[in-house]
Length: 351
Ligand SMILES: NC(=O)c1ccc[n+]([C@@H]2O[C@H](COP(=O)([O-])OP(=O)(O)OC[C@H]3O[C@@H](n4cnc5c(N)ncnc54)[C@H](O)[C@@H]3O)[C@@H](O)[C@H]2O)c1
Image 1 (cartoon, rainbow, N blue to C red):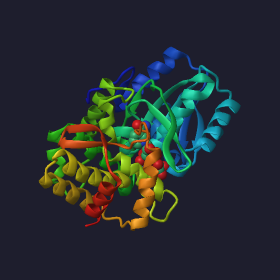
Image 2 (image 1 turned 180 degrees about the horizontal axis):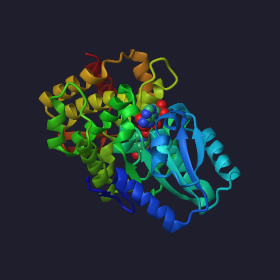
Image 3 (image 1 turned 120 degrees about the vertical axis):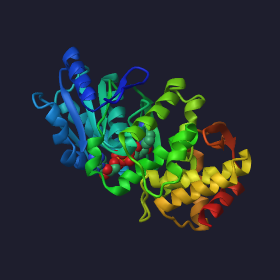
Image 4 (image 1 turned 135 degrees about the horizontal axis):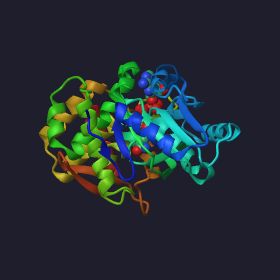
């Protein structure tokens, strides 16, 4: 049996152990109402699997529309209203069954409804298993700007059940792999060495467990992102700006696709400013481009992406701060980067 991972105030439990834990807390807390939050895909592919474990309970389903473009205040208004209309009160429990959009938005709705109700995350994508559902950050987008509105709010439990991945398409699995790879880059040379030579993605219980452990260890050290947790933003400064820029376009990318580009750019900047080795830079570019392909950017698009950086949440005092690497597993925090160097990093990506 896979061991639980213990976070700040809650366990991250695998499969039946997780479902048993949830049954226990439902019993202990005598919740007035149980809500399950899905989107149309997790309703179709994941809900029955979940209900197999909970067939005797009366659970009220509430549904959001899938997609990053719906991770916004309008969807929250709908969720607050549904919960309220269906008799939700302070003693209700919200179970989020879905990818990062559902867990981020559901967590935010739970943290604000009646000043906070209990919630549980059951991630159904690789990305939400290894990243979004762990670490207590909830949030929604503000216009095209990612995760600008949100809270830190602990779930009661996170249940990891890799069986949900059976119905996830390859593009979404690849998206999650970007975060698995990032975790290895910032923290674990051993896992990195395992991944870098592969020309396909590796997803098994062990790699999911390792990846969650890496993220959770950073969260345990620094829940509110004063220092160590910032390492998780490696590749995300430019990655988020690229994701935002392309959100409403034909070239719309998954979160992982955008982060993969962001990681190549950040690794180039690490090479330029922190002596990160050229050899590893080339290996990372080859690995990520081999898996994620190549996206073309025109100069004027790069200008607009750089413009979006000013909204990055890591900025302070008007400066854009990057996370870079000295070596695999050795992050450098809060590095200021000039516009010219960012343009040079795009040149390197495109070459
Ligand atoms: N809170 C955090 O710390 C944190 C960290 C990383 C990412 N995020 C957020 O996570 C989000 C991305 O999450 P994501 O990649 O899971 O995207 P997502 O939630 O949009 O899910 C991707 C797609 O897969 C579908 N889906 C989900 N589970 C499925 C299953 N088992 N079978 C078939 N289809 C399924 C969804 O309906 C959706 O269409 C972004 O909004 C990002 O900002 C948050």
